[in-house]
View 1 (cartoon, rainbow, N blue to C red):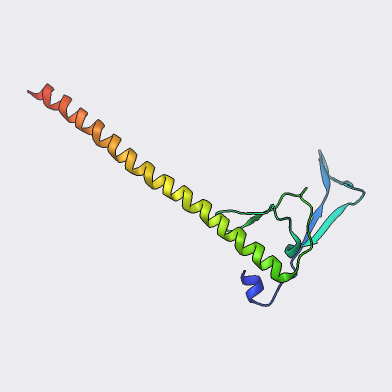
View 2: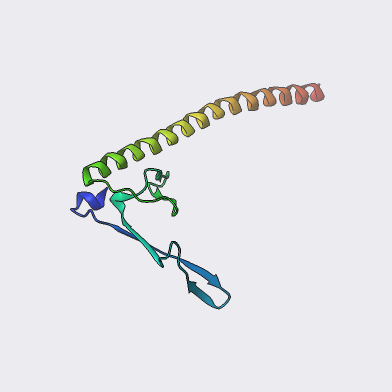
Amino acid sequence: MKFIEKGGFYLLYIYVYYEELERGLKFVKQNKKFIKTYFLKDISPKVRRTSTNQLQINISAEPIYRTRDEFIELLMEKVREGLMRQLQKAEKRLKEIEEKKLLLKQQNALSEKIISQKIQ
């Protein structure tokens, strides 16, 4: 987003196909090409935003041409989806904290009862 705010837009992805060898790398063709290139704005709609605000893109997913405005719409939707996933996880964790607190208090009460009985 900062890249766009500063006037940039055409960030280019370049995938280089290679195989790892014991003594280095060997460049290989995939779909008769050594590289795959496309602009960020044309990423697959299957892209996901991670909790660290990075985009995860499947290298096999084909890019789709879109306008810059369409990309902004897609990007903001992916940011919203990612934030909703984070919110759901946080709500689940908060619920688990309450459940854990109740369990710990029950275990503590039982433990205090046993200690109290042994003291008497």
